[in-house]
Length: 188
Image (cartoon, rainbow, N blue to C red; front, side):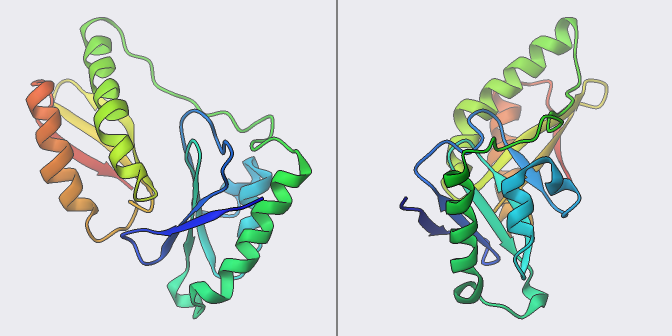
């Protein structure tokens, strides 16, 4: 198995491309070892000294290192690659049975607006940020205030340029195509 690695705009995050499906559809972020218990792969990555976060995309994953651990990528990259290879060799599922997530439901006009927002995110925004090892996910939309709440995931979470991406890129795109969106807030 050959796993490609790529740098991301966030120096504390490295992108790993195993050449196989990771999550398939959607994405998941694990910020703690407790959250990682939903996935055998995420849990094994958190066992490695210096790993502070794991993010799964459709066909890639990113690993965030803890800069305060004092380890550089050269020290933790090999154990991460080994954990990924061992996981795929095991044939286990990426998520445990209880790894499902809950999502809000919308009705009527708001449901149509949310559908438009999600479509724009899926077709115009997510492919661009996925190239950098990250993702932007829909959290919820408040029709009363016109506020769209989004999660920055993977390499985008904590990236120095994420605020600019959100404000200059995503917010202007959303306002143009979905006039009900007045502002965007990042959910941490």
